[in-house]
Amino acid sequence: MAELLLKNVGYLVTCDDEDRILRHVNVLVRDGVIDRITPEDGKTEEMRAEEIIDASAMIMYPGLINTHHHLYQTFSRNLPQVQKMELFPWLKTLYEIWKNLDEKVVYYSSLTGMAELLKTGCTTCLDHHYVFPKGTDDGLTDAQFAAADALGMRFHATRGSMDLSVKDGGLPPDSVVQTVDEILRSSERTVSRYHDPSPLSMHQVALAPCSPFSVSADLLRESAKLARALGVRLHTHLAETRDEEAYTKEHFHMRPLEYMETLGWTGPDVWYAHGIHFTDEELQLLAQTRTGVAHCPISNMKLSSGIANIPRMLELGVPVGLAVDGSASNDGSSLLEEMRAAFLLHRLNSSNRAPGGYDILKMASRGSASLLGREKLGQIAPGMAADFFLIRINRLALVGSLMDVGAVLATVGLRESVDLTVVNGKIVVKDGKLVSIDEEKTAFEADRVWKQYLKKG
Image (cartoon, rainbow, N blue to C red; front, top):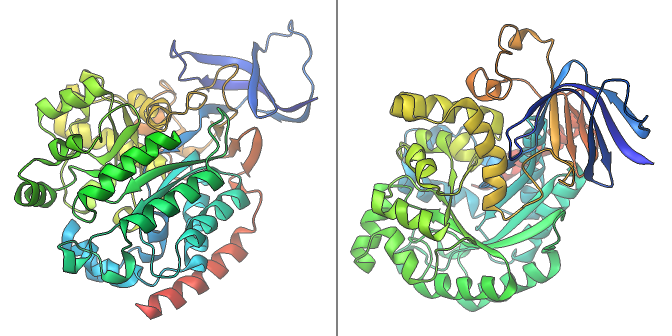
């Protein structure tokens, strides 16, 4: 018997190869996969399922995919001392708090951040965790996967890393850096334990040294070699600020992308967070090598980092996905909010060259799936993963806005929880509430852990 039937879906925004928007269809889910999409015309064979949902007054979208996050930062949001800082001083100030991370803090901050993502239509999250205080190591990654499993979220962890502390010319304190050998051994253990390369896997791993100003050339080079030997992807921050550009020119006599290219960091298995300060020649190189970019507009605005040239990237064919970035530089974990911010930012900056609302939706779904190498995610079609969300049409916030349901999430936006989120064919949010955890109790316990953590800083 099938697991789930979405009956008579009012609007189905497929994001498929033909960009179809279907009306009044049935969507049958079996074993975590979209099995069939059939017209609701009374002539098709009767379909049965363990659970049937009347979706006649709903819009159905592919699950959103977050391609860059720092979930541990959920517990350092809205701190007054950093609200007017740019990236380098912001990092140096917050490292004095982050150096006190432990497994409980990482578990509850991850649970909180991923819960918000699920409630706002995100079904897959990539987290870039790179702060490993002495004595923590693999336990922090274990805590993240445990949080994802508790919620039912599809999760990509990265084994991030730093090996340059302040004494070496980097930004972090000594207590959160590791040697190259320690990092490579832990990276191999993490991939061996958690990475599942199958098309519908719930757990995957990438290797992700933090940034050119907090890791050595040796770590970047050896991480690239190890990732390719293990068959996993590569991720880091790049071209985020002018300070970073000045750093690489001073230390390596190269611009950031040129430096990374010499270390093996271009290709279809590599994607960078931010990509704000690339030249046009560099964007052409990204397109030629199929090296991707995770666009983080809200974080880039908050830290005054700049505006990524997304219109030109899309024009050239650079793979682009959407991301919320860390909760301390976004202060939230909502890809719905990120979509509208992206739409408005590029309209302001690029006028009619800017991506439209539907383009932004595809960036957050199919574009993001391409960065993570997930061919079965990002669209609703038979044979694809059953990852999607639905919103009710009959709500005040959407009255008068449904002339273009493909664009509406970016142009008008939705500032409420979605009504239904499904991951791997399982309902994880229903009527706007998380299914697998008690939200009130979780918020109470997370708040207690957060207060204890901040007292240490």
